[in-house]
Image 1 (cartoon, rainbow, N blue to C red):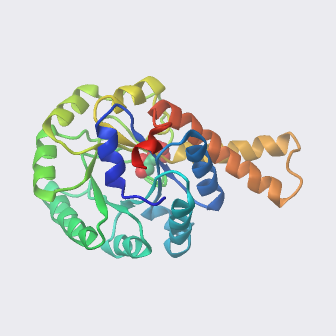
Image 2 (cartoon, rainbow, N blue to C red):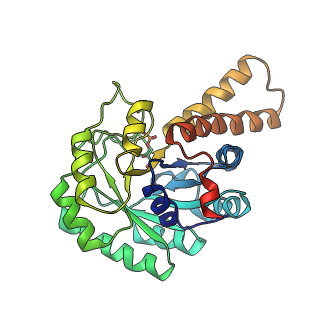
Length: 284
Ligand code: 13P
């Protein structure tokens, strides 16, 4: 069942669970994530970032993600992650994505506000919701840059939400994309201040490598969408490697099955930590 992302986040805001937002790059990852969601009766978000379109063109993977969501037995939102250009954001909306992110976190605040307002205006035509980011999550979505973390200012968060009217706000609290060099410890003091200053559901990027107990603290304190990308890609790769090593792969379709299983195992693990199992029934 394809749903609007806002619907999921608003429901999660009433309690202490969060929705897992899993980045996908091919059909096997989509199938693995949906399998985990259906088995646990969890709402879920499928997402792809603009920087990943060089490997997985939006015109091809987008319809696949939408079809998978429509066929799923659980609520699934389809989200365009880290949108950098209005052209690709509009394409995602034309394809039926129910949510888009405009990432202006690298821009001066005023410019980020202007471009986010433009995105909100476009998304409204499609009744889709918009996520934006302030402060700067470290690393980069495709590992090509090592951007420094710049924690979100609670005062700027208030101004940003008021002026843009976004539906979800990604914040930087010590999180970074990709594998962390050292175990990260999030700035819960900043999270608390932002949570107490704005009403919108908050988003945590850079989920790979965050300690389970820190995830729990996040979902109990206003983080309602948690992005996982690298952990999925690593899990798929490691599962395939292990299957080859144990001689379980004897042809293409064994490889296909090992990829699905890798994405499935990773999604299952995070669904449990995010406490979203059995929350699908809230949307019937
Ligand atoms: P990770 O690759 O660190 O899990 O980050 C995912 C993410 O935030 C996608 O937007």
